[in-house]
Image 1 (tube, rainbow, N blue to C red):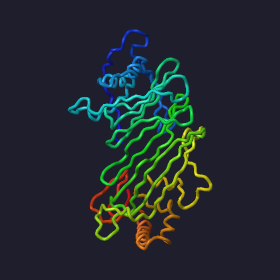
Image 2: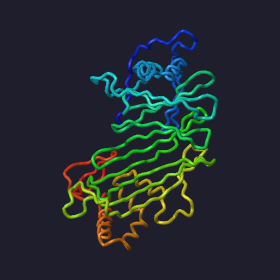
Image 3: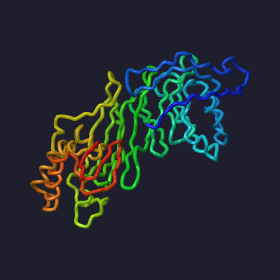
Length: 366
């Protein structure tokens, strides 16, 4: 990951008014509480001046946001905010501070959530809450993006604990794209990461024998179930398999597996997550399950794909067109032999989502 924290010594400007006792900057608690019981937990408890919160609430967006960010860094010392464009010719390039005030947990008063940072492609998700009359930063997570700014939203799910979520890009380039959502809830003054959900995931070419295109849509149930319904439209098709195909070609017009199916994610109040719900009657070849959904975000995992979509591939082997049958036969032979099925002898090395793919002459997935 490209994330790192650098210690930056900053002078904290005292430009708050003098009308109330809490207008003086609050010092961060010496022992910042970080809950490490979950690897994805970024819960903290840092005192924040009420005057700063009010400045954010009434901020004039035509003004420079640098003072707000500089003051925020003063609150979270010794941590600081990554600034990848510190030497940019335009000093204000890429800054972001875009708050939302809303009641997230059903308790009196609004909380504040925001994406903030020196660079919109390297922001931080922050959750602030007023507890016993004082404001605190409860959550601080650095968000990895792929040269694209994320967006922050709140869902009107049927619960006093509202879901807030952001959408971000994981990968993009020629013939490859992956983005998705991360969902959160604020419960008893703690933020829980509830679910990661892919949105648009596709790869064309790249020397892989099996390419894909997957899109999703989701909707929260309007009833008391606090349920999330997700629909997946997907297609898996061969890469460069025809005579004359270039090394980066794809053939989406010859799908081996395709479908349009939905699943439900139900709220687990004990684990504080949305869990995939597969009902007993959802066991036909075209129904989705956890293995199939895992394939959507795991490019080039051929053994997983063959295992997860065994029933559909068996159907193609029996009922598919002669072309589909020939392609499938060759694909299964490659998977059985090398575990990674590639289509052309590529001299280059490609790296996808942290996985390095070599040409079929080495046929190794490291």
